[in-house]
Image (cartoon, rainbow, N blue to C red; front, side):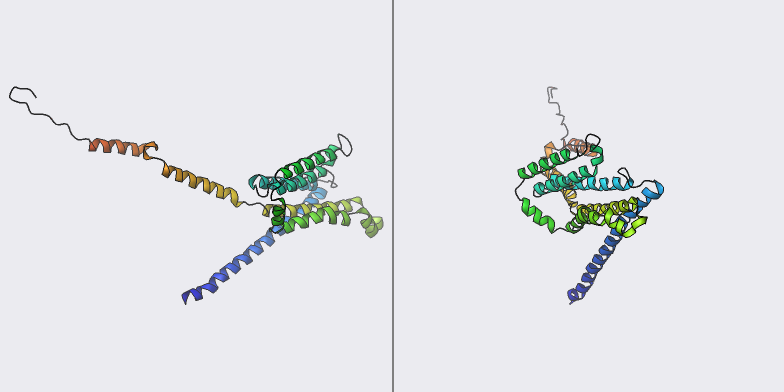
Length: 267
């Protein structure tokens, strides 16, 4: 009877924990999304930048892509089951990062960014074929994880929606004589940053952050077990334990007996 009375309270605690988590997640996402207008405002109003290649907005996009690439490369290194697929994902985002910095490669030659991008693509495919076992199973499991949806929505925003909604022809029709190229750049770059932030949030959710902690706990338990299995004579003796052992051996040593002299005076 008591167990039946306690069951609803446990369910209620579980429900409220889910609600609190959802509220915290909403607040966190709202803070992340607010980065977009903040960076554009700083570029235009504070830094007096017209959203060029070296603007704060562009650098934030590059930082998001760099962190996303490292996250998937880290998962490929940690998880042998997902290694082949995560190598492909990491190589894909690294190629996007190279494409975002095409203006740097244009200093060498116009369109030279394609060569390092092709090199990264070929290397990723070759490494993925080396770890191709379980590739499609890892891909299927990837689509079922929590961070897949924000990552996929972010990719759609960056690769499709920002290109269509941020075209200059569309905004020339809307604004006509009042059209400025800054408006088009602000909309397109803002949408791209919004998409990259969604990709970053999804990628953070797709990393198993508990694995390193479990490995540390496992190594500590193995070390403790090896200490227990080590023979007692091979364990090091330190501090008070050594003094206690010496004193105890001295106490257990039997006293020396002196023999009484015999009649001839000899002992």
